[in-house]
Amino acid sequence: MQDTMTNSIGMGLNLLPAGAFIMGGDWDTEQADENELPKHEILFDKPFYMGMVPVTQSQWHVIMGDNPSEFSGEDHPVESVSHEDARAFIKRLNEKEGTGTYRLPTEAEWEYAARAGSTSTYCFGPETVRLTKYAWFKNNSGGATHPVGELAPNDWGLCDMHGNVHEWCADWYVRDYYAISPSRHPAGPRKGVARVLRGGDWGSEAWYCRCAIRSLSSPQRRSPRVGFRVVKGLDDHAGQKKASRFLNKVFSTR
Image (cartoon, rainbow, N blue to C red; front, side, top):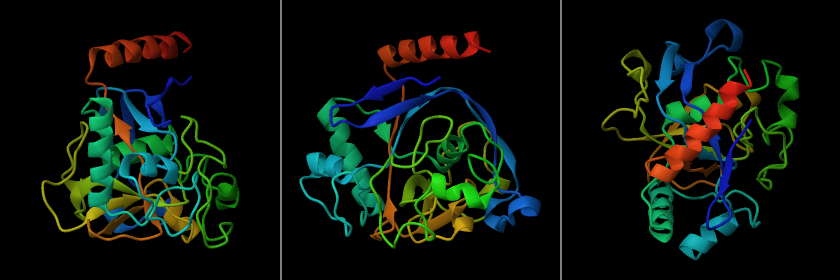
């Protein structure tokens, strides 16, 4: 069951429930990189909204007035945007809607959303052969981005988490951060030289599209393989009431 909102620029966001999950990769089943270890439990006290798809080129144009993307298409994900560019977009979106609740996801929020309650390599299970139903990656992309939302969503209604473009997260990247990460809504290290990227992209091998995969890049770097999606918090009273109604419906069906 999913509660969805659409904002002033046509961006659909799904409400994700509060809860806990095990973050990180598994060495035995997916040959996880050392920066995905150790596996550890993360708890989110509050629900939050996450974009159903990456920010599109048409949405970027409405807010920023241009289109920096290498692969042109209104419904394709915007790419060739730096971390700083993504933050500038979010700042203007907040100003347009008179709020301060839009932001980039933390990498813990991103993995929580990508897994959508699953514990396996991908949101649908461990079978790489099924990835073509969920992700645009090296095997099926033709070397380019594709319109967002064309492939299957995960169980929380989110598309393109496993491919199409890598996605900026809010966190600074520290390789061994998992060993010291707080267990409740971690926000990442306080400083660093690179920002976290999550998910795979149109040029990635299947292994780089896993839920647990962590990548990094300079905040100033722009690449046709990198875009982003947004999170919207529930700091307003109306949002909290809507979340409460949604969660009551979820738990009444269990």
